[in-house]
Length: 279
Image (tube, rainbow, N blue to C red; front, side, top):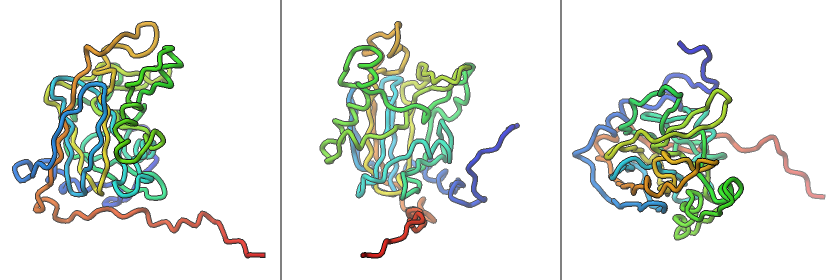
């Protein structure tokens, strides 16, 4: 029994109440899909790619557990990008099937809806860990330099920065991530912890593109996070780093009946400001 209810709620059928029948249909439909792109992201690297609206993107552990740091942008306007903190509030700090990944202001709409997750049954482990994390964010060379005295160039922030350069985006466009396959939580002192990923070879995480997306992923240099990245016990995690597979499928039009791309928030944007008369 929940002792407190969620702060952000909507009426049944409202924007937070995804059409489960629709997204279950999309997730379960396999034979009618058309594979339009597939590739492998090597260890300690990044890759960016397009996911058109109405397509499904699947991230797969092809050689064993590996954390993936995911960024999303509107493919036509990168000012609209995934908003991790609002997604935590509207959905959950750890997301799974039927949760939606929301965009930044002034757009505020679902960019993607999760339609497949082979780790959906993981739940909460004995230490309070859960998977597919929005609590934390990407590792970066600035924190590494500060905590370890080492400016390592292949942290997720740097991997994502290199990945999006061909799309004319920069470090300033990299944003808080969804840590796919990452197991995290808060300890008794309310401190963030990470633990070994429970993913196994062949596990997958899948999302449906609500709008035309530019996606980017980093294969985390911490690999499966079984080796500490910071502190006195930090070690070289390269031996637990593995590549990831990416697949983009066009969903069969028959399963999309009733779906329409979401529109940006309809707030007028005045913010109480009034134009000053010219003198």
